[in-house]
Length: 214
Length: 254
Ligand SMILES: Nc1ncnc2c1ncn2[C@@H]1O[C@H](COP(=O)(O)OP(=O)(O)OP(=O)(O)O)[C@@H](O)[C@H]1O
Ligand SMILES: [Mg+2]
Image (cartoon, rainbow over all chains, first blue to last red; front, side, top):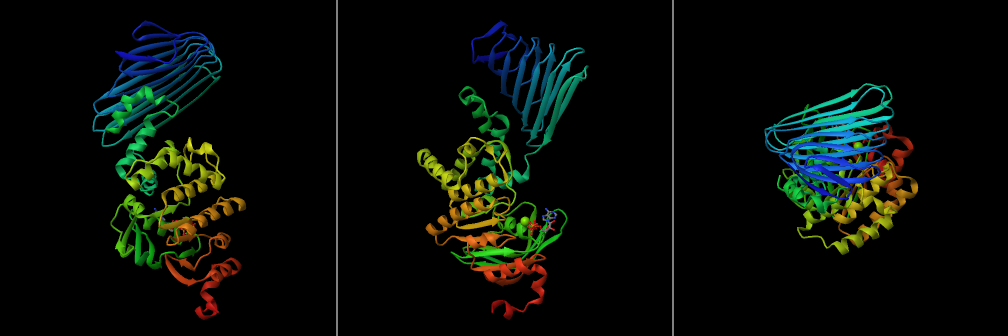
C-alpha cells in the first residue's frame, strides 16, 4: 500500500492506488512504499512524481489521457532483497510528454530489475517519450534493465539510456583528492544519484537517513 | 616539503613504464615549473603524488615533510595539504557544488563548518574570481565552461588551504583576462601563506609571468632532463624542445 503526501490539493483519490490528476493543474506527488498503482493524468496537467524507497517492488501504470499532459517520474530505490519495478507509460492522447528516471542502488548480491515501457499507439500525434534507467551495483548483485519503447507512429520523439555498473573510479579519485574519505565519497555519490535535485528534502527525510546508512 | 626520489611508475593495467627514476625536490615556499612535450608524464606525476589508482610506484619514494606518503590513500595525502588542480576536472551530476565543498572542509577540519563564515568566505572568493554565484547551486562542474571549471578548481584550492599546490595546465582553457584573475588569486594566497609550495605544469611561459618560478624543469620520457630558471622556459617557447639536447648546461645558466 502507498503512503501518499500531496503537495497540492488537486488530487482526487478514488482508491488508495488509483489517482486522477485534474485538468489544468501542476501537481507534485511524493510516493513511498510499494504496490500496484494507476495514475490517470488529464488535459494540460503537469505531474511530477518522486517515488522513493528501500526494498520496494512496484507495478505502476501512468495514463496520459488528456491532451498536453506531462509526467516526470523519479523512482529511486535502495535494494537489499529481490525487487522489481514495472512501469508503463501510456500516451493515450496527442502532444503528451513523459520522462522517467529510474535509479537504483543494489547494495548486496540480490536482484533488482527495471521493466520500463513507453507506449504510443497509432494516430497519437506529437508525443515525446523518454526514459533513463541506471543501477549502481555496490557488490555483485544481479541487476537488469528492460527498456521498451512500443511506438506505433512516426511522429514521436523518444530516447532511452541505460547503465548498470559501479561509480566511476575517476569520480572517486576526484572526491578523495579533495580530502574526502572513500566512505564519505560513496555517501555523497549515492545521495546525488538517488535524490533528485529539485526535490523538497524535508519531505524525504526518512529516505535520506536510509541512504546515509547504506 | 616534497621529496621525490628515483621514482619509477608503471600503468597498473598493462605495465607500461611512464616515470623513469624521476627525482624532484621542492622546499617550503618554493615555486617550481615543469614543462615538457605531450605525453612525457607530467599529468601522471601530478596524479601519482596523490596516489591515483591507475598507477603503481615500482621504485623510489615520495616524501612529504620527511614522511613517505607512497602507501597512503588519496584522501589522506590530500588532508596532509596536497592539492591538485586537475587538467580536466570531472563532472558529477547531482552533486551540489557547495555541499561538496562543505564536505571537503568538514573532512579536513573534522569539525562542523560554521555556515556563516563559510558562505562569507565563498562569496568573497567568487567575487575575486569573477565567478557567478549560481555555480554554488549547480552540480559539480556540470555545464560549466572550460574556464569556469578551472576557476572552480582555484576556488576549492582557496577553501582547502593547501601546503603544496599542483597546477596541471591551469592555463589551458582560460582566456587572458581569466588567467590573470586566477593567478592573482593564487598569488594572494601565497602572500598570506609564505611556506606554501607550488608545482606548475604548463606548456606556456605566460602563466610563469604571473606566478614566478624559482626553478623550471624539463621532463622527457618520464624523467627530468634539465633544470634551470625562467630563461629555460623562454628558450623552450622560442626554440622548442628539440633545442634542449643541443645546449650545454653552462650555456644555459649563462
Ligand atoms: N592509464 C593509462 N594507461 C595507458 N597509458 C597511459 C595512462 N596514463 C598515461 N598513459 C601514457 O603515459 C604517457 C604520459 O601521459 P601524461 O598524461 O602524463 O602526459 P603529459 O605529459 O601530461 O602530456 P600532455 O602535455 O599532453 O598533457 C602518455 O603516453 C600516456 O598515453
Ligand atoms: Mg597532461
